[in-house]
Figure 1 (cartoon, helix red, strand yellow):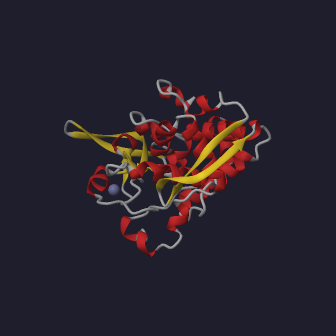
Figure 2: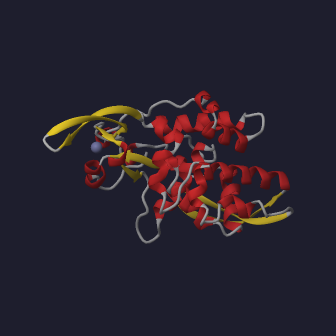
Figure 3: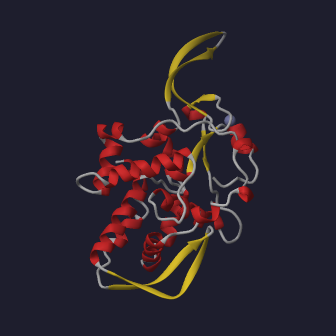
Length: 268
Ligand SMILES: [Zn+2]
């Protein structure tokens, strides 16, 4: 399994699976990318809801790495498909002559230049930033969005494709978790509605301030609030943040020049 390198950290899902009904939890949300309390609001969860939420947490795990292993996302089947991994014959200088070698290669998501995979860096779309670590909550909203747990849906092609892929996994006869597993490790993955994400130069990314739907996309809906609140109640908020920060949803391949040259990231 892809998560084997993550075993030194507890999964978000493992602790959730231990929770039993009836469970009354205070409600929290992420509103416009920030953690917020919902005053005097609680929710009573039955076992079915807890099981559904645990299945979603497991699905989030299958898309995620950790702070120390996020670069391994380059091995993830969906990352490779979405960012156009290909076999490429490259000329390599050897002493005073050259040889041809076939390597795994990938275009930088910003400039489009194709590099050998080992020369591509992995960038966080929503980075950790500032004292309040706002990027963490934004990353959670970004991940929950592809599970349809935010007010607004993703507008970009990557977000739309992942939302469609997770919908397909949900419809698997054995449920979401089985669907995710089959699509990631079995040949059934070919059936997922995933294609290559177009190269997107930062200059073409719309400004945060002109996008009226942005707040909704970073605000949890009712399902999202219940999911997030249960994770908080289980004391797994930090683990969820780490998972979402280092999720396929929040990671993209950039060349070293584009990665080191970019300033404040635009939300998209
Ligand atoms: Zn580049």
